[in-house]
Amino acid sequence: MILPTLSVIVPCYNEEEVLPDTVKTFSSLLSRLISEGIVSPESYLCFVDDGSQDGTWNLIETYQKSSPFLRGIKLSRNFGHQNALLAGLFSIHADCAITIDADLQDDVNVIEEMIDRFAQGDEIVYGVRKKRETDSFFKRFTAESFYRLMRLFGCNFVYNHADFRLMSKRAIHALKDFSEINLFLRGMVPLLGFRSSAVYFDRIKRIKGSSKYPLRKMIHFAIEGITSFSIVPLKMITFFGFLVFLSSLGVGMWALISKLQGKTVQGWLSMFTMMSFMGGIQILSLGIIGEYIGKIYSEIKRRPRFIVEKNIGFSSTSLMEMLKR
Picture 1 (tube, rainbow, N blue to C red):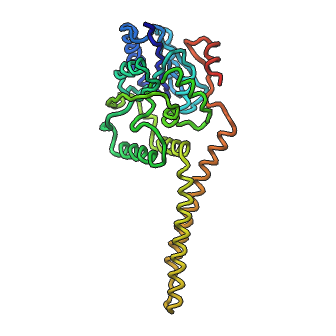
Picture 2: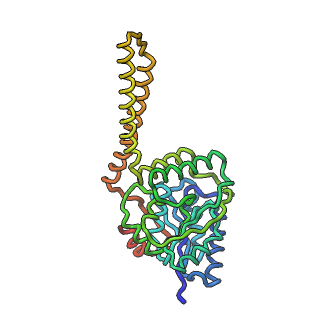
Picture 3: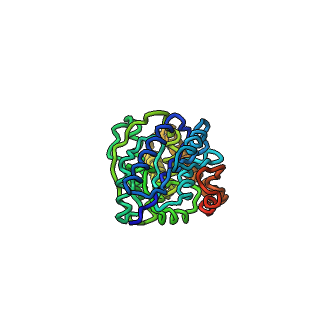
């Protein structure tokens, strides 16, 4: 029986506080999987430093010297979580890869079940949260609203799934054909169409460090996802334009009838309300159109999605071949 080679890809951004626990947890897990004959001894951990400003990369270098299966990739600057995931995925030398965040909030114990699903023929296995009891009311409400909004806009992705997933080498190679700069992997991966399944887990609270997704980033991420995978907002502009047109006709008819009946038409309140409403709709519409034009602008420039500054644990030749797109 040929054991699958596993790559565990861990994107890191300013994770100095939690990284010692992360390395210990993942190293222990991988060591157990190897000793139990579940994965090949050639399996490894790959930490991707996404331009951290603290001592994250220094720790990765230190741990790599004493670990038999730890590798590291350092990006030249902060390219964002999604691009850091791609840097790790596109550098794999394994039969399958699991992406998981460094904060240890995802349950690593379901990784063995993911590998079992892969052995049964699943090319993609999603890690899905059972519930959101550890989240604050505000975060739970905004997250669930985001998922409902995405589905309303016709985006096909897995509910309560973030970026904790297993992908086969074939699925990762297929992902390379998606050349867009504006990345939303939660929507892109289901588009691959390979056989998939899901494993469910309870997410725990972060043990150390702080969340790298404050409200500002969450809003940006939501806008990125919606505008990357749906043109419904553009269609809504047409709908609102038609609605405003009908409202204007109604107000015009009311004013005309009032005039013919000899009634005094004050007009200022209705005029002010209509002008404010139309002005708001116009500004909102320009903003939505501008967001899509900005994405076209980014795509046309074709700038690299990430730049590798250095790597450890890889042979330079093989890594450059894997990163070539």
